[in-house]
Length: 308
Image (spheres, rainbow, N blue to C red):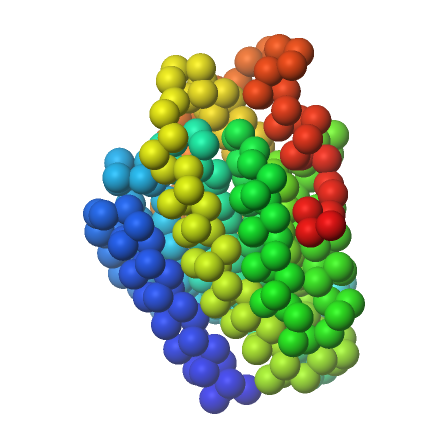
């Protein structure tokens, strides 16, 4: 497994480099690089590379992180579906990205691709992949939603006709705020525990994970280019800040990646780089009837097939 883990690590570092190059070209400003390493005396060991932009030309705040960590005990967020792995030592690596544009007409976006190896006290080691990407607009455009979902579908097409519908549905169900009875955004693709049950071989699982990561720039940057110059005012920024509150709620309450990082003693600055820079909450607020803000709730957040 060590040679395979090395191949995954190198592939993830290359993915991070390619994504950063594309984002820097779109934004016009460079991302800062913060390379870090955890020493043997720390609970969680490993290294990583945080790439971050703040107050950029397009992105008000965003990051694309690589991390590779090892620990003595798999956190509950990673073993919730596999009680047999509770207490296992683990190795985890991945690329995680969140971008919060300044212009409210440009959607927030999230990408994560990850690889786990767990070694229980008894039995053989278990490996699996997970990941996906999803789009969180503030003002929806059907053209953008269809483009994003089509790119996700096309990335998964080589792996079987049933994969895209299953992973699209999984994404809709995962990125859902149960306490609000409301979707975080318009979804995309999500999968987890791929390979843990031996139902797919390593090469195919890794190829599928790479396909999702490789599709990110094609899925997102055309939307950025279409919307980045649209004029906006304080009303749109105010609504953006309000909806960003939903993003914070999901990440801190439900997101498995955030919970895994915090529960395992990960690097807090890198884990919480996904938080937007300006957020607002209001008591029992509802959008005005017939407004563009209401259209997000009525026409975009309810799950649907954007490709029909």
